[in-house]
Figure 1 (cartoon, helix red, strand yellow):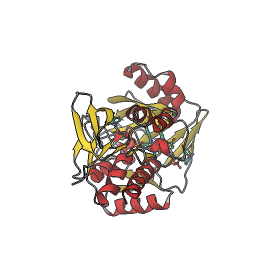
Figure 2 (cartoon, protein in one colour):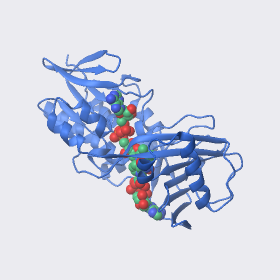
Figure 3 (tube, helix red, strand yellow):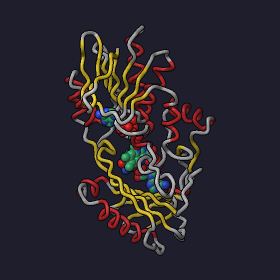
Length: 328
Ligand code: FAD
Ligand code: NAI
């Protein structure tokens, strides 16, 4: 009996790899430092219903991803979101309709990764601190000092800065991961008792502390009892204000929102702030995935491709394909 394959990270990249390996008859075991799956596609449960604080929607351009999203649609995991789309530049708000198909998980973004995880074996709240080789197999050490293994291969599916630390056994791969700069995003959610009098449901913003805002409740299947909004600060603003207290971030982004939305904005009755430290790679790459096939060590994630959900899913597929090719 072969040892299983360890996958560190249950975001869309790790789960894409897990699905492909499982479908090919391989035994996998997943690990995540969080209490649930999804990573940057997770949704936050709150008093006003669940909120998509990370990924807002995703597009599908690659044929393979288009096909898989159609399967997710058939299974009821995703739905099309057709927001009243706007853009704001220099404080001027204008309607900005387009033909782009935008997908969201339903009834919340995390529905997709939850469904992909299914019954696969997983350890949550388990932060891996070291990946090391003992004889012919791999072991993982976690932050509590427990070790896990043996494993035949390891797939690291975390953001690049966390991956580089775990890739110490393969210095070339560690160096590539360490060269990727990932930028932060401050996210704020606001809930209003009385719906705002605006047609805006999604808005790309320029020349503001904000770069995106969305009416969470306008997405299909959402259970929000208030008029809920999610605001994202730009990378530049988030970097400059990385260590601001959450209350100050809420106040400043609420102010920027009130300035550009073009209708009366009362004090919100619900607020929440979340800092995504590794939100997006500063640059796209064409790596697919990183691999040292002789060692049996692989890394994947959005940072290996486009910094979007599609890129993360494709990267997970690429890691699995390379691993399976080496086994054949
Ligand atoms: P992640 O989702 O980050 O998953 C990595 C997982 O690894 C996490 O669950 C983490 O807990 C776990 N982990 C990390 N270190 C360890 C460790 N040491 N041990 C164990 N587990 C570990 N993309 C779009 O396409 N459209 C959008 O609208 C969009 N908006 C976004 C908005 C924001 C604010 C953010 C933050 C991202 C957005 N993205 C968007 C990008 C998209 O979310 C990511 O590209 C994608 O989700 C990345 O998936 P991943 O699996 O590569 O990484
Ligand atoms: P997309 O095609 O909808 O958007 C790509 C870009 O095109 C947008 O950022 C925007 O600048 C522009 N755009 C698209 N439609 C527009 C419209 N109707 N009016 C005005 N401008 C428009 O989706 P794609 O390519 O899948 O990109 C994903 C989105 O996720 C991007 O907006 C990106 O900024 C965002 N993202 C945010 C992250 C964060 O940390 N905040 C991380 C990763 C992605």
